[in-house]
Amino acid sequence: MTLDTLTRPLRDLRISVTDRCNFRCTYCMPKEIFTRDYEFLGRDLLLTFEEIERLARLFKGLGVHKVRLTGGEPLLRRDLEHLIASLRALGDLELTMTTNGALLARKAQALKDAGLDRISVSLDSLDDTVFRAMNDVDFPVAKVLEGINVAHEVGLGPVKVNAVVKRGVNDHTIVEMARHFKGTGHIIRFIEFMDVGHTNGWRLDDVVPAADIVAMINAEMPLEPVDPNYPGEVARRYRFKDGSGEVGVIASVTQPFCGDCTRARISADGALYTCLFATKGVDLRALLRSSATDGEIVDTLTGIWAARSDRYSEIRSSETVDLPKVEMSYIGG
Ligand code: SAM
Ligand code: SF4
Ligand code: SF4
Image (cartoon, rainbow, N blue to C red; front, side, top):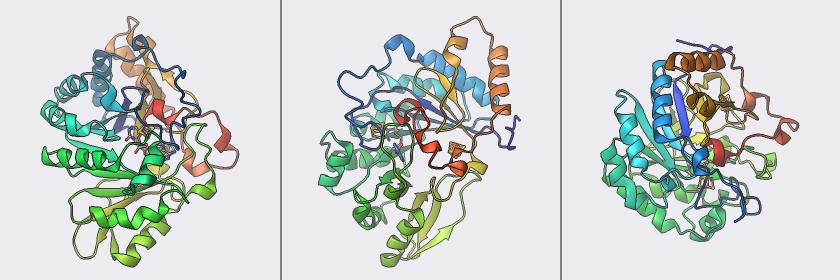
């Protein structure tokens, strides 16, 4: 098993299948930057399904046991279920996806049939006005809730519902969300607003610390901490004391978890990033489109992982915030 310079193994792979999105979440793809004229990747620049499958197979050989498809919005990639089926054929891999849920009600059954194991759906508020403003394309809450329910019915559960919390924008709706999902079998997770990319105007003042989020919920619905499901789990888990489910918080800013970070990411155009906050990736697409053998590609991947020293969230400062980091929509969450 290859370990990086901080003795972390490579266990998870996140693959962005498109840099496009049908939402313009203000914290991710602000409308002012991602305009109609924005140059998204052309088709020939995206990794093909065959290329993604080959990489996933090689990464699996290096110890990866979980693959998450993301984007941009992964459900915008045509015939995505064909990719899922080919990844499923690789055998013993946990296959998951993160989606904004807009197209989920329509596609959930096909995703399940192709072999997807579970799904995470992003939903920042149940307040329709707040949610429509956050996705900035006036998309209604009800359609995302419908997607979540269909995903649950077809067996893609437990559905994890991810909400990014931004102070003064949706923090007043946290408790309502926790109450709504309590007892449904879905797991709501609140994510601290992060300084990903360099276009979202992040300020530390906008972050509501996870500890405050837990305290807010606990005041109305008592919670107790639960052990992680596995080492390196990003969410801290809490159980409702009355036994009606759990909530999670992802405290990437106030309680960084780089020490356990076993994730590699591949952008939609096939660059490998060893940290969400990286400024540069390694072009795997060129390698895939050369005459390189599987063995040569594996050697490259091993070398990159062995040299990895990323721990951005542990060294975040006023200086690092302005680094030209890769955009979240490109690298995937
Ligand atoms: N479009 C899909 C979605 O929204 O679920 C998948 C890609 S999205 C980039 C993945 C996750 O990143 C989402 O849960 C989103 O809320 C989260 N995210 C995006 N920008 C963020 C930020 N600045 N801070 C924290 N989380 C963020
Ligand atoms: Fe799109 Fe997801 Fe980013 Fe929102 S968070 S703009 S849905 S990629
Ligand atoms: Fe992993 Fe980078 Fe996030 Fe730290 S900052 S947990 S190294 S992705």
